[in-house]
Length: 56
Image (cartoon, rainbow, N blue to C red; front, side):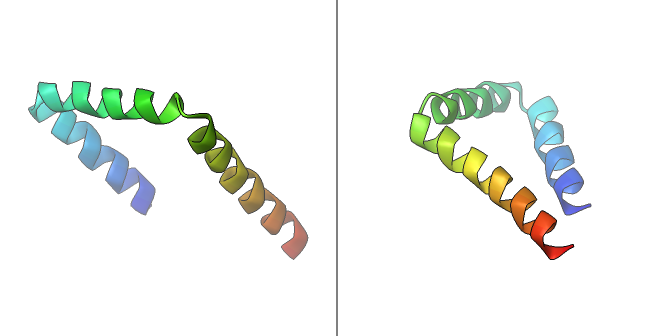
């Protein structure tokens, strides 16, 4: 629920301020171009899935 609210707020700001969209896109591209950031994100996703599997 909170994630949907955050995504909605970011999208609303991007619609209200178009230059903000290019800034957010630039930050996203810069983050994805760093292999360490991508590996860390994938590790977080995989860790969350593994922890949920072990709880059952």
